[in-house]
Image 1 (tube, one colour):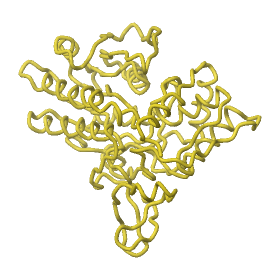
Image 2 (cartoon, one colour):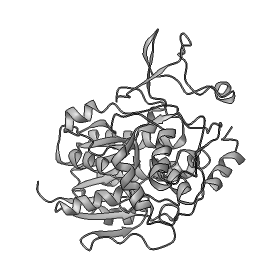
Image 3 (cartoon, helix red, strand yellow):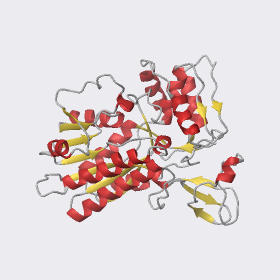
Image 4 (cartoon, one colour):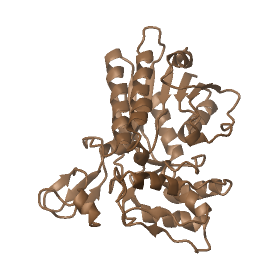
Length: 375
């Protein structure tokens, strides 16, 4: 494929960094726009980038900076976003500003007559589904509403069928499941996705929304308490503190290595088959948080002196089960996940051992408790 002029917003973040490196290795000319938020990057200098990469520090809401970042660009990967379910529930205005308004500002510039952008790939999220897809042995497949407060208050974590009350069995969640966000973060991700696709269709700019499932990788900030759960657990373990699991630890997700996220982005850029559509990016495998914790403990604390702490409490905005049906992206783009979770443990653990993370998890939990968002 010919060399393209590419902009990666949020390109200094943990997903963006991996994407940028792969784009450069394939001969593309890459520019990065990143605000370098201290919560994500700390107060030290950002990770050093290859000399071929043009770095612009700035906000997607700054129109002059955005115009400079988009000058001459053919492809945009929009990775920039404020991330974190819990924090979004008490900072809704900040999340809406960065994610929703930031994306609208970006697309307004991309749709201008002077723009040379030929494709946009947006980082969306599985969080917009809310609860995933389930099966009722009596009533068939169902996408249930969020759990009721009185159920979670008495420690009834699993979902029951709204029609007959039978406990539901999790199924792979496909793109036809209607969005039902349970957090402000999820609402803003839905807004980002729909803004890009609606603007793309209206102006004839091919656009693709990739719904990432739970991403983990080396280079993920271990000191940011609002990062992915794998990094949160790794930070606790490295500090000799038990990982804390809400509910009973048996809630499940689809943990996806960052290299597979990068693969999906490149396929979306290179092929037109998925233009103007949404696609899940995951492994199709369901893993409980308790299984994830034990896997990380085996790698990072093999002496066996730490055990996960089951909190038995509920955090507002959390869902019980959601894992990906990836048949559509396999069919449309030829995507196949390459890194199993077992291999990913080794990858994450090897990198984590080189870090000295500051565990701020209790601080984050305290913020939630003070606002009544943990019960």
